[in-house]
Image 1: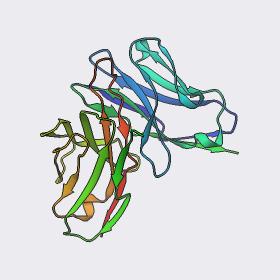
Image 2: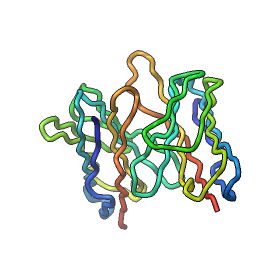
Image 3: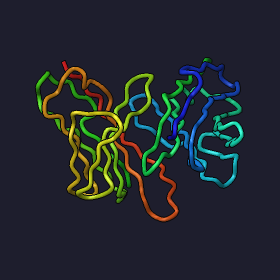
Amino acid sequence: AQSVTQLGSHVSVSEGALVLLRCNYSSSVPPYLFWYVQYPNQGLQLLLKYTSAATLVKGINGFEAEFKKSETSFHLTKPSAHMSDAAEYFCAVRGRGFKTIFGAGTRLFVKA
Amino acid sequence: EADIYQTPRYLVIGTGKKITLECSQTMGHDKMYWYQQDPGMELHLIHYSYGVNSTEKGDLSSESTVSRIRTEHFPLTLESARPSHTSQYLCASSDLGQGQDYEQYFGPGTRLTVT
């Protein structure tokens, strides 16, 4: 069965600092992996996705994630945080059939 | 503009009332989903549909029902609302065409409060 674990329900960084949001997955088949972002009072929006091409995936708003099969990880990073990055971030893995399994989310706070 | 819409955005209703949460998408997607979202928790899939006249229950037990009479429309109904139904409900859709990677497109959500 597929599963996703996001380490840290809350992450706080200063504006301009590195953002690192951690995600580990479990999958019995080669996975499709996703990061979504949710801003207050909105639905989820796709940030980036891994689909077995390049292991380093670039997304919108300067975010990127690296697929590491040996570590079963798909951590999300951004070199320099901006106040507008404050949101909740969800890691997800496509499971069996057409179901997508979502993590519990990590809320990112950005301090001025 | 292709998009996915949910109405109402916010709803406060008394116990025992029947409610229908609306979801429509203009992207022509075959697959549609309903998720329940609570703070600090994973999104829980409560219903999904492969296409017209096809609906399935998700992983989370739910007292709601859905229908899919038209490709673009996927309403969710609660026959008798209870306080335990208080939550955020997210509708999503995805395309099953060749080359698609199963990313989902989400509506803005309906925040339901049952008093």
